[in-house]
Image 1 (cartoon, rainbow, N blue to C red):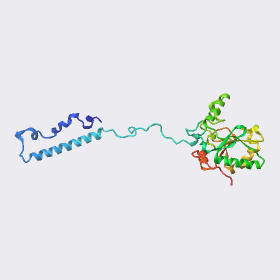
Image 2 (tube, helix red, strand yellow):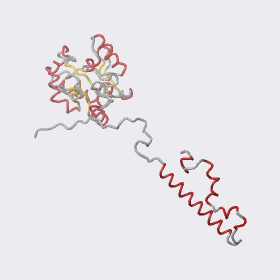
Image 3 (cartoon, rainbow, N blue to C red):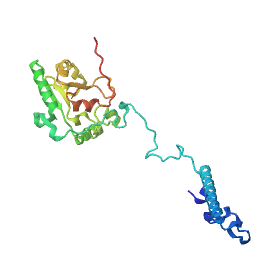
Image 4 (tube, rainbow, N blue to C red):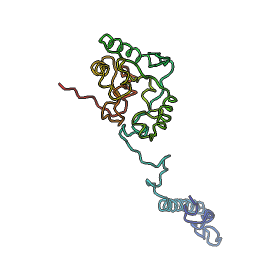
Length: 269
């Protein structure tokens, strides 16, 4: 703060402190009081002057000091107001797809290597998937894994290159394939499933007419698998009856459900 504004006087006002002491006491020899009174008068005058200066300074500070209002407080790093958005409107998602990290290589195992194409999933998911395949086969149904873990680099090719070949905008492409960094396949918990008896339905909506799909609908939950994108799903992703995900342990459950604002399904009594 400007010193002149603090005291109400120019900066050299400290030299004028004597103005508050009676002239007769300071420099008029003819009017000097008795010697025993001089120390007391000087002391009293000095104290009075100091008190008066303190009072004047305090009053001026009170009058001139700016009040601390909301406008005078330091602004945070961003002046944007805090908002509490619904999880499904999170700024982290892209075109309806949530962000997912890549599964660690150490957690991935091979579930199929048909035609030289290695399909991998996380260990826990792979074990349950193989159990599910065996159970389906005993019922005369052939479940075939089409795609499992995909890296972000793989997803870039699938999203951008295929989108360009098909002359699709990003929004159009996102209805069919997740943007890089936002695919459930990155997690190692998701798998695309086909019917070995009807390969023409692979990755097609009419997969839901196959025995494989009907069996999955009736039995997949026993092995902790669920369909990710049913009809009219909250993410707005196209119906994918072939895309299933594992939710059978804590990590997989939190990966797909944490902070997604999804409520438990209603069960009829």
